[in-house]
Length: 355
Image 1 (cartoon, helix red, strand yellow):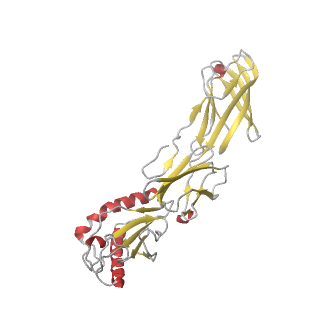
Image 2: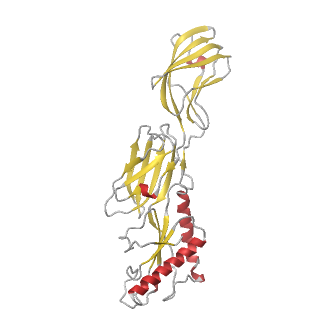
Image 3: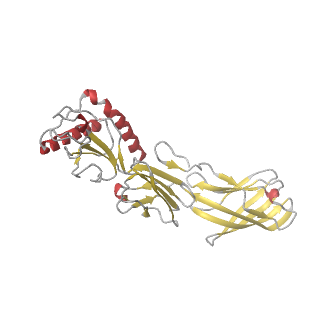
């Protein structure tokens, strides 16, 4: 599996795979598999080519035909025709998307010797790299449920769930039976009540094995150095702006991974120390959160930015009332598909959209 830097995956099979037929059983000793020189392009993306029967005979071949019984019950006649000794001929297998097995009988002449029951069995896989369709509502941590839609028929979906501490929570592998493109595919995972889902990795496969995937945060605290605010003030000082640049890079990187697939928002919570009245501190912390949100908005973040003030209700450093503590004048940054749960240091959910 190859993973690119954007968090999106593409199948490693880009060119066609050349494989030898599963069985080649001559009915007469005078004609062998080497005489026909058979090989097969068995797996292809439908947008890039077709499956091919390839013949490279050591002797001259005439009037060669293949009559095949396909695993869906259809009988497929594939005319090949003459091939000179040492030459090569490629004949397309008339198949659309899907995985089918073929039981074929070849007939013709090889080196002047007629044959009519040369057995040939093989499998052909035709597909396309699927595109993934999801919204934030498709990830429901409460129900331990994720829903995804594919642009191709469904073969298999793999899901890895990680906690907000980076520790794996569950791995789910679910097979499907070629459900039509656009069908909601529902997966469930197991998670303890004490665990918080922080991110997931999703891979979707079509029946031929072509796949794509995404990684997305669902709830992650962005590590950062706290911006220091002056007592009673909410403006971001020029000397403090450097502390916002490193988180900005991390936020932008996470957003690129799910661009065009899943909506992830930035939530900024503001906090104060215990100096002053509670209501005043709520208002002050809200203004601090909005100041930071506006700074990020001006930097061109391509996502919604929410802000909320929690005043002195969630102290980083516990202090008595009316204590001037610089470390409590801070903010938190969280990327999430849904509003952060109130039990994680966010006592209320009254988020205000800044951008």
